[in-house]
Every structure is written in structure tokens, then in C-alpha cells.
Length: 509
Image (cartoon, rainbow, N blue to C red; front, side, top):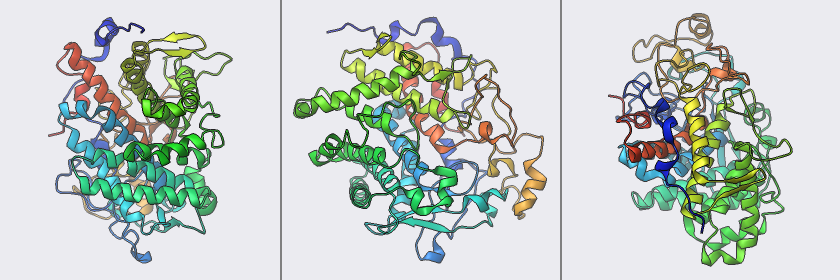
């Protein structure tokens, strides 16, 4: 067996680099999801500048679609990124629930998941019907209003047998299956309900195959087109259902379709709300080293090879120019628009894979050499450090954290005076005229939001109109919940500082 270093042997002097500069105890990543809530807000809502909104969603169609999340700075409820957000929140809790519990934020994490799954239960009105979207992106983007004042279209769209969407059905099944594991002990009845919906959705997505954006048209294609297709989501859902049920039918599905669906064919250098292959491959790899799955070792090892291609590309350990680009400051750089989503998701996968290797006393094999688990975790931490302020701009890209962070986030609700402070109606163009172009900082701080981030040269323009860099999305922050918990655990192990990553989970008072 290979002897590996313990955690306290590898972080060294760099570990304290960012621990002390961060001030305050009122920041935590889970607050952001409360700011993104649609529907009737609960009594324990902590983001007090928000109020109830979109209380008649689905009414015209005779279906209750109140609730769920706004995906970003607008007010459309897009099903695909919302489901991915919930899957990632659930995965973080499943991997690092104890660490989240240790900082007293487990209940809030669970509530953030349930806010999404409650909505999915409503949206899945029959076995082969799933309501995919509420609102119209084109209409919504003509207006700049608080969600409480919303006057834009709340048209709803669905997938069904005639208009299938295997990608959306698959991702929603994955989210509900992953969440069912989270709730298994704390709410068994709810867990069973989620699993029932997940199984129905998977069967629906597999039986009636098609891309949801092709069947719903421009209403989603202009905003969340499923470029990767639906096969990655079907594999993703099958593996999450296997984790939730231990039913070999789902594992066999992922094994039998591994080649034809691209699970062991696609070597990918991104992981996102659209492209799930790297996540699929890591989930499959986690199934290795189990006696009851030894008959599948050959295929699982092929999944592992593709998973490690992704990880090695992030670590700059692939050859032939197949690595993820980096900015001069060391940030992973995939593309110009909302690049931070790829950074947070990469940090999450790197973190859990480093723990997987450590548990197996194993190494990552890259074309440029072997990599120890501690090196992988160190790199994941470097990406988080960059997000939180260790970068050329000395800026935290997690809103509300540190002394310097984006003040003009591209976000309708945050950029306009709070409805609770001033209930006077603000119209569609009035918001643009009086609030959008203001040079002052947003009146409401969107705490916990991870914005799109800097460009390829580490440059960042904090401007409300610069939506490529200053807009935040739920799926940016979702992977951070688990990573912050893991790094807070390191903080606890080393006992170097009394604060640090733990402040990211500290509840606001």
C-alpha cells in the first residue's frame, strides 16, 4: 500500500494566508439561497430585504407552481439549473454533512434543499408530466423590477410524452434521488416521497427520449440550452438512484449504457448544470473497491479513467494541450460568461476525489505524473482562496465576504430598495430608469452569491450592466457549501485560527 501524508503535513505556511484578513461573522453561503426564494417566504426567513413573490404561478393552468428558486438576477424559474443546484446541495450534504453539522448549519442546508424539492413535487403533476419553466426570459429581461412587484409574463411550460425532455427529467430525478438520501433518517416519509418521484421521472425520461430545449423551443434554448444532450443526465440519474436504492437495475443501466451514452467515451474538461459527464464518472468511480460490484470493475475502471482525465486537466497534468486554461493569477478559466460556475464545481469534484483517494490510500494517475490526495486538495483550496480574495484584484468574489467584494451585482431585487422598506410599486421601466444605471452600490447585499468573476486576465469590472461578470447564479454557490464545510474541517483540525472558513457558515443575526 502507498503511504500518504496526513492533512496536517501538507498545508504548511500557505494555510494561514487567508485565515485572518476576513472580518465579520455574518456571512454564509446558504443565505444566498434564501435571497433567491420564490413564493411565500417562511417565518424563519433570514434575508429580510426579501418578501413574498410570484404567488399565482401556475394558476391559469390549474397547477400550483408557487415556490422554487429564481436562478440568477432575473425572475424566471428554469427547471434544469434549479434541479442541478439541488443535486449539488444534496451531494455536499451527503459528503460533508457532519462538518456542516459541526458549524450549526445543517438545518439551513437541509432547508435549502427542501425549498427546491418541494417545488419539484408540485411540478411533477403526473408520471409523464413535469412543468419545466415559469416565466419568459425575453419578457423578463425587458423589465428591471423587484420580484415582489413583478408584472412580467408567468407563462408556464411543460415536458410530457409529446414534448419530452430527458435531460430535464433526468436531472430532476437525480436531484430528488440525492435529496431522498439526505432526508432518509431525518424525515423518512418525505424521503420515500422524493424517491417515488425520482423513479417515475427517470422512467419517463428514459422511455420518452428527447432534448427539452428542442421541444420547448427558444423559450429555454436562448438561456439554458442542453448542449450536451440528455444522455449524461440519464446516466447521472441512474447512478443517483442506485445510491438511493442500492437496486442493481440502476447500476446495470449505467454499466450497459456506459459506452453508447458517452459515459466512458467523453473526456470532458468542464462540469456544469449542462455537462454532467465528469460528475457521472466520479460517482461511478466511487463504486469501485466493493466486492459486490466486482463483476463491473472493467467498466467502472473506464469511468475512472475519464474522471481522472477531468481532474488531471484541472491540475494541469494532462498533455497535448488538453488542460483547463488558467488566468495569470491561477484561476481555472473555461469561458468568458460566468466562469466562476466552473471553478466552484471543479473545486467540489477535486475535493471529494481527494478524500476518495485518501480513503483508499491511493494516488491520482495523470499523464504528467502521480498526484497525491493532499496535492489535489491543496489545489482545490487555491481556487477557493482565489474566490475569497487571494487574487490580483484582492477582491472576494463571494458577495458580502471580506472587506472588498462586488457592490453592484447584476440582480434586480438586490439593486432596488427593499420592498419591506418601501412598498411603493416600481414598474418595469421605472426600475431601469431609477435603479439599474445608478453608480451607487446595491442597497441590499446579496450575501453568499458567487458572481461570474474576472476575465482571462484577472480583470473585473464591478458594474451592474456587466452581467457576464457581476451576475450570480444558484449553481455557482451550490458546490461551495460542501467545499466550505470540508475546508472548515481542516481549519478545525489545525486549530490555527478561531475563524476562517467557519465564518462562511456563521448565521446572520
